[in-house]
Length: 193
Image (cartoon, rainbow, N blue to C red; front, side, top):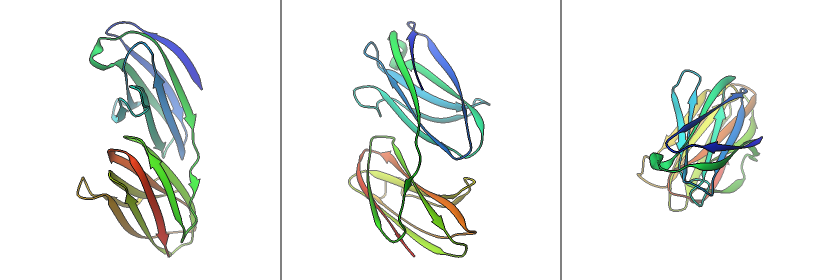
């Protein structure tokens, strides 16, 4: 969905959105009049994520996967509070890209961006996931269909690759999330059985 709004000088705009379990959304905020910032909170006011320039040209782009049904709060303001004018908010639902086990997948991330890869797995399978990022700090998380983290690797700036080994607890659908922690660029993701 997409809507155009007006931001007064020094103001903050709030929007509420309802999410579903397993839903992946991308939020975009664009303005030709000011440099927008975007923040995402849960219904209780707990900070979830933010973005300033991930959409390019001073605009915002934020990707987030929700693992439970919830109300989320989107906050839009001007960087430094000194801008005003028209802005556009757009929310798109994105499905995970199919990850073929044993094959290499490639992607490209903007600053603060994330890609979600989905795959089917069988109970007891030991899966090794390798991520190689080209020139940026990346993080890798593997979750089950309920959003439970089975494994996570974030080198915290100590390299551009990640390596995980996880045993799948049951037959079902799983996701691998690749996130740009610092910088941007191309990456490759590979699974080994």
